[in-house]
Amino acid sequence: MWKLLGVAVLCSGLMGCLFVVDSKQSQSQTQWHSTDRERLVTGETESEWIRQTFGSPDRVSRYDDGSEVWRYRNTQSSESEMGLFLLFHIDVEREETETLALEIRDGVVVDHWVERR
Picture 1 (cartoon, rainbow, N blue to C red):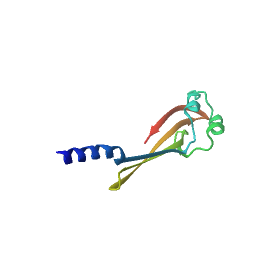
Picture 2 (cartoon, rainbow, N blue to C red):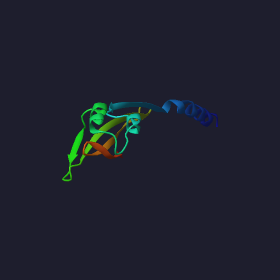
Picture 3 (cartoon, one colour):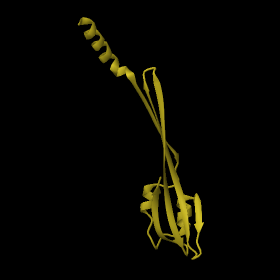
Picture 4 (tube, rainbow, N blue to C red):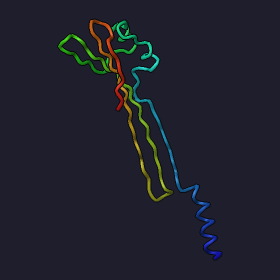
């Protein structure tokens, strides 16, 4: 009985030491901020302002009707480590991408949206 009670006390004392968690989060690449996106006015914002504010687009798609879609990408990554004392170790990596897409026709933004992956 005392032996079982001793083992139970020892196990419950070690429970706090069993799980090790470490987490890191980093902003890998940022081309745009939500505050800049809020300043966009459909039908008024000019492509020159876009280029000055956001820089060169990450990707440009051109269409037959003369319109273009400029894409600016933000990438954020996180890494977590979990382990059970000395028995095993797991690394979990995750990357999130938000792409701001701007449809431009005749030098003016006619539509914009955010694509998440």
